[in-house]
Length: 94
Image (cartoon, rainbow, N blue to C red):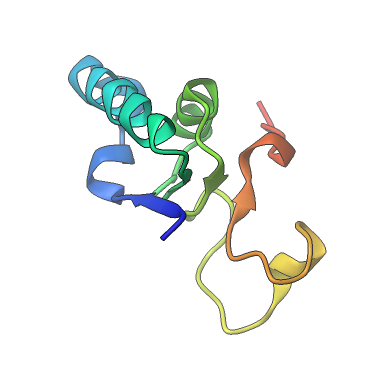
């Protein structure tokens, strides 16, 4: 195991809830101390994307980036064999 996926129930509307941001901050400290990368699922707004990026999440997944699909459209965005958008390559449209 080298990646921890953060559940969408924590990520969804995180920009509006200080308690969620504090929990994420502390959770990421633990995850980083163990040397894992992170994926945030449930990123549905530009605000939430910006919030989790600011905390240093490695990868983002969610409707803000695109709907689920069986097509391999993600290959146009990130390198081959990736399963989520790398947060550092994400550009907000706002």
